[in-house]
Length: 319
Image (cartoon, rainbow, N blue to C red):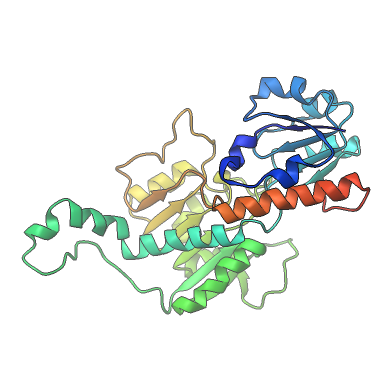
């Protein structure tokens, strides 16, 4: 059986034990990364394709006449044409729950950094303002306590619930967003999406990107939020209209934002949020998931499902 890994470098294999994956009875062709115009040729004879962020279009899938399994080093499946895969009876299997601890700590790091203005005060200590202060401390930026505040979670899956589980340690209440016409998990503290935006002090996104929720947070939604509310996105960049978020930050419409994802990654053509002058904005380069332990679990999970697939056993699949 022939296998192709299209973008192995994106999981940072140098500090991982990948032997469990590479020792499978598969003849591997491994690429560090792949451009769109290289995919057809690279997967042409593959039975198994592994990808993290390299897209597989209907054309790519049709071109791979032997293809039986597409396994993702990721949870989101928006990079795969699922309809094309389904028509060919190709199994598409995503990774689940491997990076929970890593994403949770990254999310809370952003919440805490924005709440206590950690970067602002670190700069104040280093740029001479503290040395020149008439007082023993610098108090240039407002700091609030999280206790008694509300955390609004959009997406009550593995990540959303795990982020929410930390909130009581800070004395926060938790609400989950409810959307009309959608069947939700039975959390008692679900409230209407717009009400959640109005009432939350921190709003954190943990939902997958679909055709129906692009620009889920746009101008109207940002206008509903409190003027000191914090918006966190460690999910997918296109969930937020970036132009609207930029305007909201510039105008002081919300208190701040922590963003780990952008609409285009890498932002090779630039991005309007990559501006040092924007107030109360933290951007990280899609690193919420990258703890070494997280990536090791990812490799082991993908290897485990491949092993089962080779034996004809059932594995998780989205189509």
